[in-house]
Image (cartoon, rainbow, N blue to C red; front, side, top):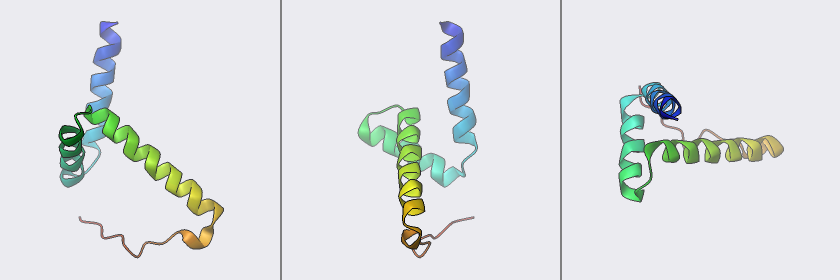
Length: 72
């Protein structure tokens, strides 16, 4: 059991470390606002993204990057 908890904590840190600082901070801020663990916020964000992608694949004209303003 302890090994599973340790693995989950390591996975959470690895996943969060893959994001730029401003994205990681946004996940952590949202977790505090909602009183959810940061891994739950990350899971919800990924699920929401996948729903949008699936929807866009069904309607190819719906996919747009007009509002995308990436920060590097």
